Length: 224
Image 1 (cartoon, rainbow, N blue to C red):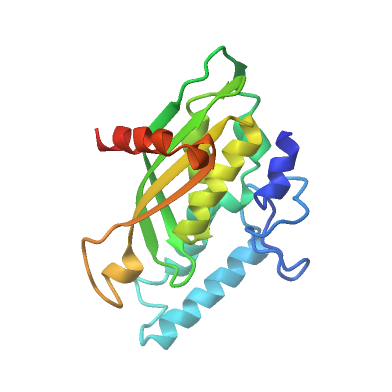
Image 2 (spheres, rainbow, N blue to C red):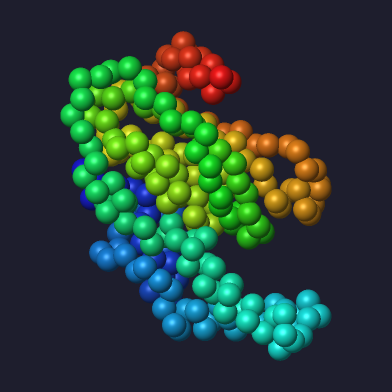
């Protein structure tokens, strides 16, 4: 079951030159995680950053910027690490048989992601609930699942759905609910330039999709 999660959630490297995958589409999963960007890929990123600096009117060789291309290349290993996270290793067998069929809610999970349209950050909190069928997942794994999907070039709507679908695939629970709130720098520091709006997205599966009262109870918990 867990192996299917790799394919469902697009666990593979970005290999445009090899297979055109983008880390989000369904497709054949990569067999092995690559923990770091290769030297060739880092050099390509550094060259691109130098070109950007020069073309916005800066001097890439001045003291404050001479190391910036390398720093940005290394930064992408961290802020886009979700592409290279193996979901099977992430869960690491932390599924437990428990006689419990009431909602499990984990809220206020902080995340940081990158908007795929402008490559600017968006950030906020994720709130997740599921109703177990016969298994529960280790508490730390839910924030790690959020992290895996956040650390990619993303849109909030897709990220919300991917988190819900992965939890549903792993646990096969009676229901899953995911609510994500986000503040987007692409609309705060550019464009409409509004500081305070937050975007809310939700994705419901199983009983949470079918039962209005369950949804209400979940949303009430988020207000506490």
